[in-house]
Length: 127
Image (spheres, one colour):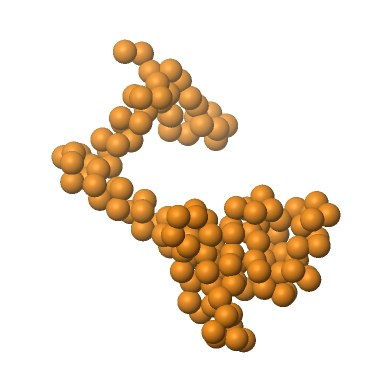
């Protein structure tokens, strides 16, 4: 199944039909609270009516095209995060440790190791 992002429209993909290979369905992942919208017949008749009545977005309201577009989006995000981490590690000698320390310093919040009762304790950093 071919999945291509639509250039200039974030979260919109063109996904090849499984039954009719020459047909591409438009998928918008931002619709219906992140459930997504598809131009295929299955979504129009079996999924959209539930979402339009206010049903909570669920996997059963996703057609195969929405699932394929979400999978492509997930791979794109994983690649982008991995690439950003590589850039941080190249720029700074202590790499990821530096990024964590700098993030904590910028937000002025230090997250301690597991505290009493298993909860995470948060404290302000004193400069």
